Every structure is written in structure tokens, then in C-alpha cells.
Image (tube, rainbow, N blue to C red; front, side, top):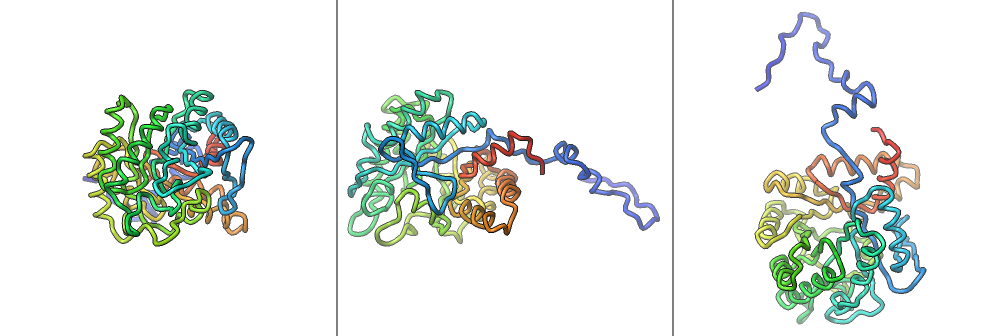
Length: 337
């Protein structure tokens, strides 16, 4: 496949790989992987009220925000060229079935409507799950201490339709119930939302990297854990099966979560299926980056960009990251490796 010139008798190298690394312009020209602002998606946390902006202590630079503040944060993202946001809701009231998560006049439908009214060209993605809305903190309806998969599906479908009716461009089920993509696709189509896309959290692992998010979204399980329905970190073949099933049921994009410790999964999914793949760089990755940077142990900006590049190199077409605003500013200012 490869043909190389015969070496000279000299002990000096004929081929000098360093020549193509000498300057920033040359490195940029021959770079195999591109990282652009158009690849970034910014997660946002919505709460009730007005003028509310509550710092998330374990995630410096991130906030719980009322809808008016959320719109202003999204406006900053748009001004930086970020094309999409992903919404999570933290309601004032919770119950056993997470009804605030699928109420047509709930927090997320109102946030979606406000964002689309103020920023019509912004893509609005909405997380679809019950964990933020249930008293017990699990991703579905509990029966005898276990999540009832099939009883949960209609509620997820109702939530997806509520968000689509408010104007969401994409709904993103993160619950890991079996059959959820098919149930949501069928409900969306029956309600006339044929153009609303589904971003499936297809390979979502039961990860310890979610800790800061559970503080942010107030969604930690009151008892037990989610290992019965989220994926075992030891498995990769199983991830391919999950992705295959979700694609068969109608997923438009598939997601791997977390990102940094699961780049092999990102790569395998992209190689196997050749479909758009989203990597979710989760709260624990962000918190570690920020903590080490604040201590002066790492160059925070360079490590952040290296992390994002690694996700793109592995095959991610888009990256959900809490660093989206920081990364976009660097890219807008002509960041060079």
C-alpha cells in the first residue's frame, strides 16, 4: 500500500516528520481533525422565577437560571456562534410520576417557547427523563422499588410531545428505558411532529462522573442507584447493540455519555454505523478540569481544547459540553494549538 524511497547510506533521517509541525499555520493546514464552534452544544439548567441565577458550586461558571436569565445566556452562545442548547429543568414541585416533566405548561415547554421567540435560529434540544421531576430521583415510575420500564414509556412520550409542541427542534431521551425511542417516535408522529428529531442517549453508562450534575439538577436517587438500567462501564459490545436498537426504532442522532473515558465507544459507534454521533462531556469531566486549572496544576484552556479535540478525533460529530462558551471564545479569537 505504501511506497517509500530507498534510504541513503547516511545515518541521518530521510523523512523528517517535524517539518510539518514547525509553525502554527502549517500545523493547521495539515491537521486531520477540525474543531469548530458549530460542533458545540451548551447545556442549560432552568428553574422557576424571575431574575434567578444560582451558581452551581461544583461546576464553576455554570448556573441554575430562571427563563429570563436563560435566554440571555443563550443569546451569548448565539453571539459566539454556538448553534444549539440542551435544556434541563429543575421544578418547584416533584411527585412520584414526575408529572411536572410532561405537563404542557411546565418549566421546559415555557423555556423552549421563550428561547424560540427570542432566538428563532437557535436549535433547542430538550432532555427527556423523569429523574429531575420525581421525588425518588429515578428515571421512571417505581414499582416495588424497581423502575417499571413499560409504565414509564407513555410518560416519556408525553414529555417529548409537550416539548415538541413548544417548539423544540430535538428531544433527547436520557432515561435508558428499553423501547423508549420507538414509543417517542410513534407519539411524535401521531401528534404531527414529523420533523422533530430524536437524539438518543443510546450508550449512557452508569458513571461516577455524573456527581456534579446530580447536584445541579437535584436528581440523585433517594434510594438505590441506576445500574439496573444504565450501562455497565465494563461493556462495549453491549453499547453497539443499544445503538443498533435505537437506530432501528427511529433515532436520528445517537449519543455516548460520558465522553472522555468512553472515546473507544464513540469510535466504535462511528465506525460501525456511520451515523451522526454526539459525545456528552459530562459534569465530572468539567469539574475536574476547572478544579485542576484553579489550582494551577494544568493549563486549563489547553487541556479543555485537547479534551474536545480528542472527542472529535474519536468520531464525535457534535459535543455537548459545559465548556462550550469558553471554547467558543477561544475559537473566535483564533485559538492555535
